[in-house]
Amino acid sequence: MSTEVEAIINRLTLLKGDGELTENATAQTEALHLSKQLQFALQKPEDAALELSFWPSYAFCARLAIDLDLFKLISDGSGTVSSGQLASASGGEELLISKLVCAFGRITSLLTIRILSSNTQRTFCHWVCQRSRGKPVGGYSVNKGDGHSTCCRRTCALVRMSGYYSLQYRLTSCSSGTHSWDQGVGTMASMPQYFRINGYRCPTDPLDGSFQYAFQTKQEAFSYWHQFPSILGNFNTFMQGVRGSRPQWIEWFPVRERILAGFEERQDAVLLIDVAGGRGHDVEAFKHKFSEVKGKLILQDLPAVISDIKTLDEDIQRQEYDFFTPQTIQGARVYFFHFIFHDWSDEACLKILSNTVSAMKKGYSKILLNEFILPDRGCPLLPIGMDLNMMAMHAGQERTENQWRALLVKAGLEPTFWFSNGGAEGIIEAHLS
Image (cartoon, rainbow, N blue to C red; front, side, top):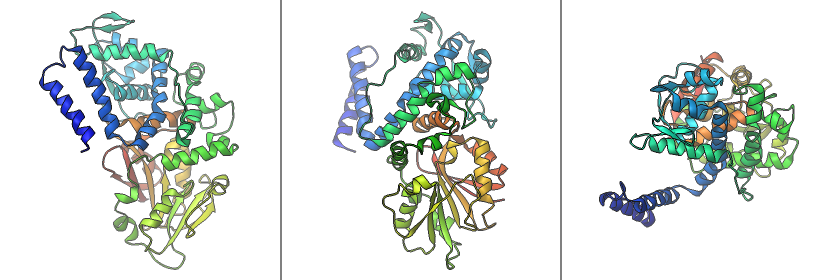
């Protein structure tokens, strides 16, 4: 533990021990400041930058909730109100309502949230929102004697703030921040109007969604970006940095037991194909970690991406490939996809899987998906922000374990789920049923 962290914790403990936090406003202000300092001291810079790039997404949630009158519906409800009830009362889709409530519950104490069930493929959670009771403040209820008064004050503050929200900075030196700002926030700025016109439903068509409305294009987002080298470059840099400080999958997944064991080291045998792997950061890390292993390593991506690669280990073969066409390499040991399927609807994912399954060797080949696997409760903030951005730009979504399982089984695959320590990132290992 660093000296700074220890000093902050000691001071917070002292404030608590003195009993000043209950009544003393000055002590409360100091404790709040110290708690923020503690977060800054503990959080790694790369994680802070990544988290910062998604914060405008949460302001969008508040703005959309105003249009749907969700805050009032929650406040006026009797006892508890489910996402289904909110959807019925507001006219919004339950999946969309769930996303908004999930974001609120994670970033603040706006709502007391717990899960009722998670039994439909179209919703990753079913929420219950405890209302605050009391007389109106700023149009919403507060009772100073009620345990939810702080929640409601924060709700009112966020509602007021969201109407005038403006981000006064831009991460000019960080391509990941630039991509998220220009493409993600650029889309979300138009989404309230998009939803008013098209109904409050999550977009599902990658050719006719909120991104197309914002940028006035009929192209899917990736095709659109490929027209502009600077945008494509920012995206590929974003994908290199999207892991933040989280360890690479090869650091915690049992590669030797699950991949290398049983690999047929015959001439020209393909060990791993990194499908749509961008500049090759994942397959290159694999090569350096297991440099003693024989077997071909191949990086596949669209021509514009492959031609943009400046440096890559010479032992890694580059190949132009579109995963919406049949996989050209038969019988590889591993077909690896990192943050690919969250970009696409279930229908599109099944097409990608079908093209891969047709190339797999039963009892030998595996598909590995490096994706977020959303927990049923207590979802970390980063996957929530990613989920909102996938919806906005690609008509895609992050998925729960049940949603992943249903998708893969439908494609003729049997999945096994592996989780890293902390967060919601994991590896989904799938073989032919």
